[in-house]
Image (cartoon, rainbow, N blue to C red; front, side):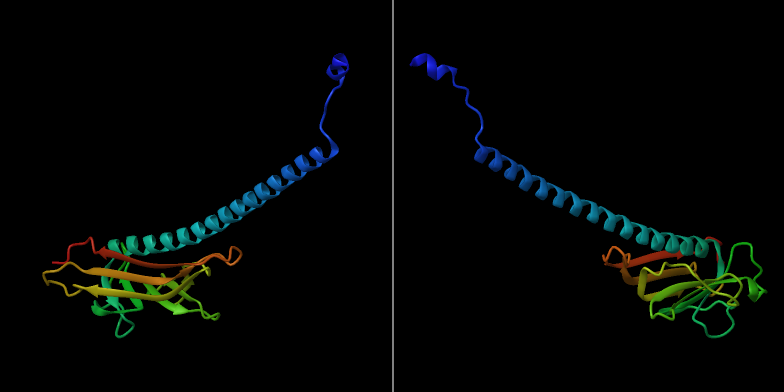
Length: 195
């Protein structure tokens, strides 16, 4: 009788196999769900990073141009080729670009904050004194408020012309359905001595 028991080979029963397969399927469904959520989060982060890169490039280009320029004019009152401070801020800023002619208005660089036909606030730039405008921020960057604060434009005063730019808004890709708010401040001082 002892020999008979040792010759019997035992295996998994049908119930044990079904339980093992069910547990494996549950673990795989949870793992796949987590992987898909991770892929979706990565796509959203990349889309948001792309939008923020657009905003950073636009702001860096503005600051670089302002530093190299001169004859700062803040606000759309008066002649844009005349220096003008605005310590309380304005959405319109003009200046003579590097190598430009101060007596010619048609070569002034101008930045202006306004809303487009869809009601989205954007920053616009003109390289020809305001004759033509083009947007420098992407439609996914919704700017709520942009101001230029300009001081020291009077020639011969004891301060170098300086521009402080404040930008506030939301950014996010439409497809990613992810939005983030931002508030950025940048400062640019004129490199040409104002003596």
